[in-house]
Length: 456
Image (cartoon, rainbow, N blue to C red; front, side, top):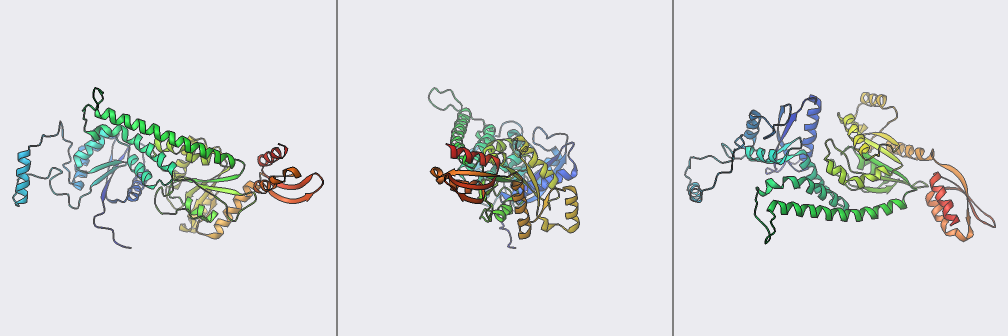
């Protein structure tokens, strides 16, 4: 494996173990945060944790832990009180000249007691923190501070490809940034515009509100187009892959459909819904959709923003809950998936549990999983025989809901026969003086629509 670049950004993880959170859950949350940070392109240098009844109001951590964190970043470890010290231009010029001449000024770097070489430059907190807490942490550590929500929003922003995903992520990002703008502007109260009576921060926030409204209008137009496409697919058999991020949904999608969807071993590699036909194709066709992955503590704004994307799950005929069975926390991840789908009322859709990545398990672990989830399908998306078995399970599910029926297509409506072949399986075809007689097998709703089209 090639060595990492020497200039790769170093990050420190900060975790607060609150009452009611077990050691195992706390460790799992921090491990997941580490993967999120790695997805952003940072290396985790160290982890600082503390048990507390609540996050410290000022800077998240207590005084001792704050100093420990600052030692890793080169900061002072205390939150300065009062207004920032005014700079003396003559003194700053003297310090610059003395430093250039190699003379010691007798003063330490403002960030801390020593230089920042070998220190972390990013601090990531495994909680959603307030703008003031983030600012205080930055002042105490001299590092850039992100919270879990900010990390997830940033990852979504980088990975969004389609126009719809970009709009949804931008709305979530602006909703996240808006309440933090006071810190970013330094509390400036300059007036903008002649007689406007509007402060800089008020003007900036109004621009954000206007931009969010503009993005929502664009998103509504896209959603209308998608609703029309979904309406055309309303009678088709649809399967949606849902589950925790990096559970292997895209790998399974590629195996089931033969499509070249993105497969990557990183969190939130897929943000756009992809719809492809099951391969080899069935009659009628079964459409498979890959959806955005879920994660613990998913920011509410992102759930709301991706509601239209997740509607693929809501409108599906069958949900495949895809779980990384090799992950020690897979049960908790499954609960997160169920909770999010319950929020959008998609938990009422029929479902099938798929325990993926079975190739990473030993025989004992496989038997234990199957004993715990008797109706689940244990497989590996990379094993062709497992994929064939899952494909047959999908075909059997829909086959059980189909009925056989005789359809008469009048000669005046022969142009609709192609639609019959698309919507149902034709078992036999015969002709008489009235038209074409077809014996078909399909879903009752699809057959009812076909009968109505013949009569119109």
